[in-house]
Amino acid sequence: MMFYFHGSKGSDFAIVSDDDLQINAHFIGTRPEGRTRDFTWVQALSIMFDTHTLVLAAKRVSKWDDKVDALIPKWDNEMINIPTDGEAEWKINTGNRVVVVERTDDHNTVRARVSGLVQVDVRVTPIGEKENKVHNYQIPSDDAFAHLETQFKFFKLSDSVEGVLGKSYQPGFVGPAKMGVAMPLMGGEDKYQTPSLTSPLCKLCRFQRPSISMVIAI
Image (cartoon, rainbow, N blue to C red):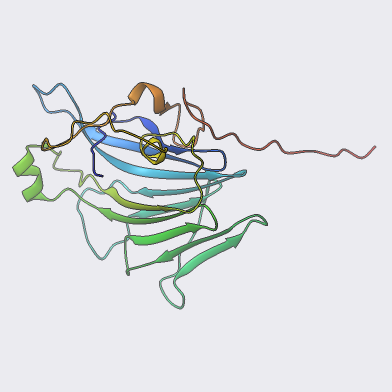
C-alpha cells in the first residue's frame, strides 16, 4: 500500500509508536503562493527505544554534490562517525540491543538496524532542477532541499501500534485514504504531531521511556 502524508513544514510527527519503539520524522517544505497545503519532505528521523535515540538527518546544503556526504548521524545526541572503509559500519551493544549503522554506498546511503525491532534504509537526496520545475515546488536557489528517502522493515510490532505509518500495521486496518486517485492522502496530523523530533509525546503515542532506577549509597 502506498499513500502520501503531507504533515506540515517545520513540524515533527510520530511515524511509528509502539510499546518498545517510536520513530519520529521532521518535515521540511515550501508553500508556493496560492497553495493551501505545504509541499513537504522528511529531513530527519529519530529512532527511539529503551533510553536511547538514534537520529539520521540530512544536512542543509546550498548546492548538491553526490560525492559529498550530507548525512548527519547521532547517537544519544552525540555525533557518530560511520567509516567508509573496512566494514564501513558503526556499531554499539546497549546490553539489550545491538545497533548497527552501515554504509550501503560510498556517500549518503546507509542501513540502520536495531536488533529485534527495526531496519531502516535511508538515502539522502536533493530536489533536482527538473523535478522542481515540473512540480512547481519553487525551491529557493540557495537550498537543495536535501531530504531522506526511507524504507522500513519491522521485526516486532504489537497489534495496537500507532503512528502515521504504524497504524497501517494494525490487524484489519482500512486506510482512510481514497485509493485509485493519483495521490491518496493519509490524515492524522492532529493525532501524531510531537513537540520535537526526539519527543515520544503525541495524542495517540504508545511508547514511554523506561524509568531509570538510581541507588544512592549513604
